[in-house]
Length: 394
Image (cartoon, rainbow, N blue to C red):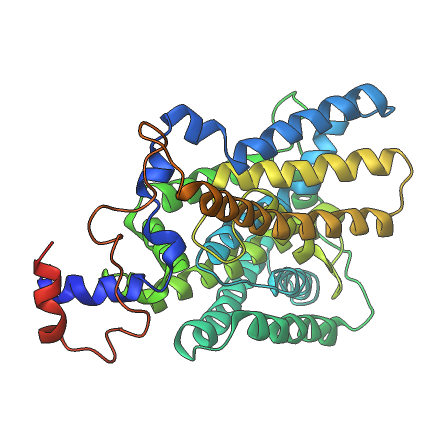
């Protein structure tokens, strides 16, 4: 990397001062502390606590069928939460996932019941339509540069409107019984539903994609600073497009399972599921502004929502009250990182000037981070010749 490139990238990354000087502050603690004292493991601990409370205080929660139906209920939630994690890590959001799921359900019903195609062929075509839905969302966000919130609110209504328009208020129920039985079957003699096999495969695939590939590291870079990610070689538009294609295709696949499990195809299937998906992702420690998150935390968030919903239903709590509780969890998960960051900034201001020798390490880099470029300096209004001498002095 040339001196001019280092200078321009340094100027762009200085726009996010909270990310510049994290190296010492983030890594001076032991690895086990950084791993286990985190938002993800806090949610895992909360999940274990809620499970123990529900097991000991809720009638029939520890019954033999509870785990089976709980896993079947959260299977679509966990499937869609995986690509949604990638989308939110880049600083975007996709509110159209439940509508894509409903559209997929309608297409499978029409193609199988009315047209006469087999379930595999109808499902493949429905997934292809889900890919096209993701391409449409991704194109508007990644290349047209429209806000993802506005785009996916619009496509939420668009895809749901198409689904309802194709079937109206009717429902298709004449599905092949063998495929319906397969969707609700268990693994061998266990109580674990067979749908968990593809779910586990998806979990492993997305975990490798996010945490062990250059593509996944690029998503974190985009979430931290999109302009700096572009300077470091990340194809921002293509990465964003890919995440939306993944949400569209996985949502369509979840819609196929939803249809076969309940044996009906309706235009309003999966209405409101996007709330639970986003709540699971944010509860799992993914930052709503992007740049932070992990797959294991998202899985814990999805399981926490599933356990709470199952326990509350067994206690006779209505669906509306459950939705209120999930909404409150969503608000808390959004506010918590902001509050924690505010407390950390306050502590650094109070203790920064009075640190004694031998105390905590400094929170800034000794070279570039300690003298960031001016805020109004950037690659669009500076020349390499102006910045190169400054960069070479380090």
